[in-house]
Amino acid sequence: MRTIQFREAVAEAMSEEMRRDETIYLMGEEVAEYNGAYKASKGMLDEFGPDRVLDTPISELGFAGVGVGSAMGGNRPIIEFMTFNFSLVGIDQIINNAAKMRQMSGGQFNIPIVFRGPTASAGQLAATHSQAFESWFANCPGLKVVVPSNPYDAKGLLKSAIRDNDPVIFMESEQMYGDKGEVPEDEYTIPLGVADIKREGTDVTIVSFGKIIKEAYKAADELEKEGISCEIIDLRTVRPMDQETILKSVKKTNRLVVLEEAWPFGNVSTEITYLVQSQAFDFLDAPVIKINTADTPAPYSPVLLAEWLPNYEDVIKAVKKVLYQ
Image (cartoon, rainbow, N blue to C red; front, top):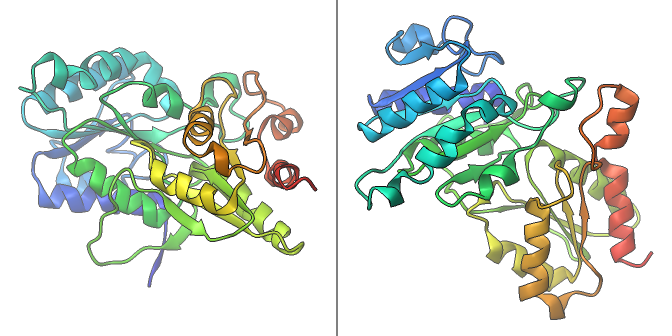
């Protein structure tokens, strides 16, 4: 099987869907002439032309609104935010129109739209460009939230997101666009709302998603040397959440660590913790531990940033704590 970059998997997913359906188009800042800020739409302007790959002004509220209106009119837009930090400028359109229109119209309008772009930290980008927004959007009924961690999942999930008749928030990472992985050339999709057990284990369940899951893999490799077996679940879709896979794993391992690159208050890992204590409490042999960033805005200093972000050593400590080691 061939190996391609994450950015190439994203571009392939969009291009294949645009060839299949002429109502699909891509719109955002620098997506056309510049081939995308992170080259995730490379070559698409040449193939599809300026009517279907559209550069926009720096006006997230404006082009998010255009996308919602266009979806109401029968199109299937893909709206790229250069970073989800900039989506805050357009969040009124996402929350108050895209997410709610189906209910407010009594089912007369579906909003088949994908908002995609990078989320969370990406090195020395400081406080206003290093926020994780998964839990923000997952809090809103009417939105689906997808956070892939590798090229294979990115392509399959994005194709499903584009075909979905409801608005989907598709969150990537600037630090993953160059990641390489095996991706089939044949047609495939991955259903939304289905988690993936990336590594089977018996002693502890680790749940994570997005680029931070790499730290769980590192931790599991080190812990294996000590005879500790970790089961790693990649959520892939934050909302709808695959509760069944999480609960089944916890009932097997009896211990849970949740790793998430987000502030510790009111996040996805908090929701998972509540789920497990409410539906699998009697199976737990230790309290659930969740690992998050420090409860401060992201620092610029690389030394402080390393302290702010969770890492594999934090995962190792948490695993040993739930194992009472």
